[in-house]
Length: 236
Image (cartoon, rainbow, N blue to C red; front, side, top):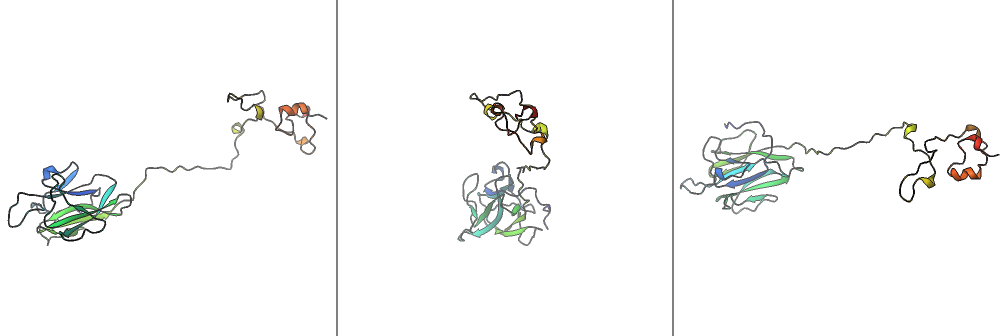
């Protein structure tokens, strides 16, 4: 049984590749240089003859817009599965990544992904099984295994602002002061005040039922009001 940790990694895998040497992996990439039992995890080696060419699987968990959601191993003559991308060349030398089989990965936008790949391990013997891992296939008498897991829901940083309304009437201080409409704005765009701007206008209740005629002279200064604010200014 493998000693691989049963704890799910914090971040999912965002890219998978192959390099010719563990020392040539890009920054932020983890190289699967050994199998779970400590053997060399070279994907190119031949069981009968020693080769100068070596290839190692690598991957990264760098946070980006995409994540890996599936991995497949197919034969050279097999058709590339729909939605998958072929890992055709090594990252460092652009040489053929594998000689007997082909590695394919499926990439998905992070915001739409639900189940993703969190870890990849290589097992020396196919009879070994890893808990919580799925076997992708065999290559050079080694088993390629990966672990899937649910991706936490994408959380937006945007905040929704809520506006609360109330039925409480505005205070007198918040009410707009009444003034002559024709003096609100002059040609220069400035506001012109009058001596009565801050005086609240209240109509006496005794004038509600039988309004009297307003003096034409005073109507010129108060065109918007049918009644005068001061009863003593009414005309008979």
